[in-house]
Image (tube, rainbow, N blue to C red; front, side, top):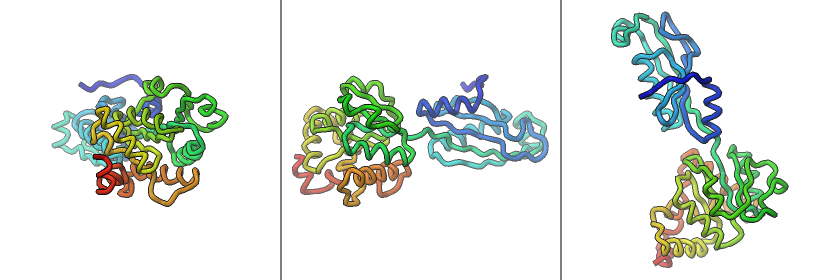
Length: 284
């Protein structure tokens, strides 16, 4: 089921990060006595369970693999200690008798901010998101706005019809989608797509009245309430933001809260609209 590959662990880590895939790296950090491997030996476990490298094989490696799967899920490191005494040696078929410590750390790709719309708010959003550690892609259907002159420091700038560009965007649970296009109709086009992908965060600019209007249209098209409930709209933490720069800070702060699983992040539609009795009545 699991196999080893003749590939450099560090090169594979770079490849996985570029593809937006998680992994866990296990390293023998301390050795006492005789073991079937060596200090600094490494085992890389990918999201799909496949492995690269080894920390010695046997039951030790099986336990490290299980720990690595947990580390990938929680994104928190673990420290393991193994005693290869006579009982363990018999079970493993390894007559060593030493001890070893293994440190298992998460390998998490850079989170990606997908900003739809290349207007004045997007310029501030791209800058703040980049400073906060997000890889930024700006998407707009106007080449006069979506270009390197306006966004020199982002990872990628895409210009074209939104529906044609969606297929080029690899979205996963490390993706953060922010919809700030030039108008209601374009916001609707992007949200129609975004509501059905597996992004960590989907947010849309606009007043509650505008958001309600968009939701009504999408529900008429057949999108479920469950799909729409996870959208953060109006977007951003409520800090009284007014200027493009302040709005950018409030939105990126909310993205960070989602990323770090902070309680302040759950200001989604389910909180701001669906659970507001007066606003909920407007959705009927």
